[in-house]
Length: 168
Image (cartoon, rainbow, N blue to C red; front, side, top):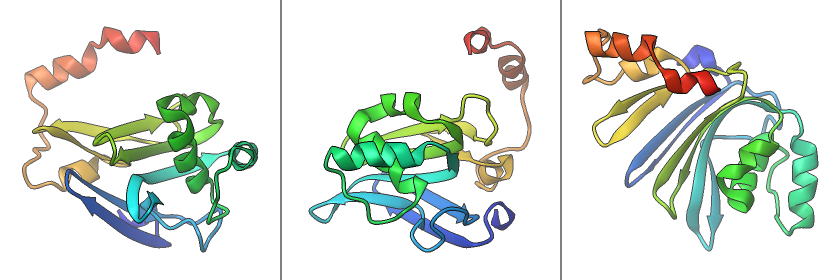
């Protein structure tokens, strides 16, 4: 995955989750390290692995600052994370840009996977056991030793006919 982000790398591991990230530095070259955590009193509230760019992050940051949020970086990554903490899952309705990200909420023990409306930034996922494997390329999923690169007849049928996708 080094070609997806040649500038930096990071891993964050908690009880039920592991997030890894490769970074192509665009905004806040020094402060945008990932996976990025939001903490309170030394405990992680949520952790974000993010790819993309939120074009309206300056306005969102100003709004959050007025509401009492303090920022440690100038990155759009931190704005995405703090927006989630303020508004929950509905914050995605305010994002303008191209992005794919995963947020692990330690308080709820829940994973939120989001991709921009036009699907510019890739996000691949595979249900696995009691969880999910995901990444910006299929090879991130295929790297797991228990994942097969073969599609069975049920998988083919599932991918060809998905009426739930028609509403998007």
